Length: 69
Image (cartoon, rainbow, N blue to C red; front, side, top):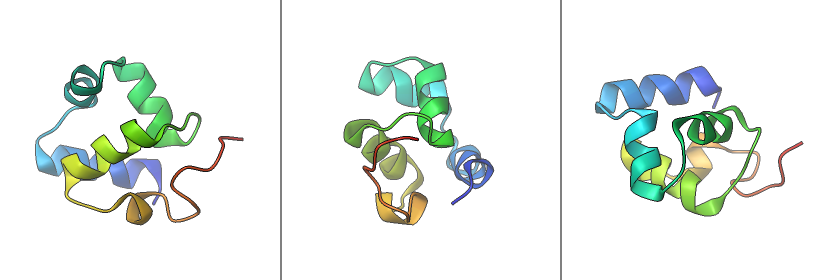
């Protein structure tokens, strides 16, 4: 999925990047970097997927835990 699509899913779910960041102990900025594919952690990607009710593989189909470029 494109980052904007993930952000829309978060908006529809009523969840902010800051909410997720607080739950997993990272900044909103870090969450944004994960969404954009600039960073990658299993724990955070799983938290984002759970928040929007999707599987990690649906949000990041090229490989959920690949190293960021």
